[in-house]
Length: 118
Length: 109
Image (tube, rainbow over all chains, first blue to last red; front, side, top):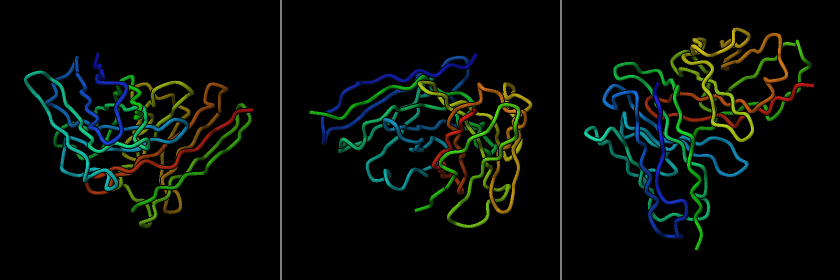
């Protein structure tokens, strides 16, 4: 059974860096590509970026970095210079198998609420 | 900036049929956009229903189906059940980038 678990601080101060990690179990992280998705309170889903390419949400690209740690089977997100607009539930998601272009988004973490506030 | 548009809200009676659509500001949606559909109930994590236009996840009920319709991606619910009341989102692929639709709130009554 594939499981994803987000971890990181639930509170970040404005202008600081939001850092999250997603630990994957039940699957080797090397077999797939992985995405981050967020959802602001009461709003829709927003794709942030994924490990399969340098493509990311254009509105976040300049503040975003992502990395993969295959030895520990986890991947990470860093978003710099956060503001209140970055307050959201952040989800990590299994995006697609390697060598197959179609996104599947078949497995999701439970999500972690990150609040940006002083 | 690409915008993917869905109907804000739709209402259906139990047992009825409902079609949700997903339009791209860049033009007609084709199979190459790999339309993907999700269901999200209040307080829950989104759940993938359809990928690559019309392929179902192993857990997707048979009453859900995906297609292309008039230049848009479409999700059809046939024989709607009360438990289908939820928010539905589409996702389109743009050469590596992904964009979620604005979401449709489906009410069953």
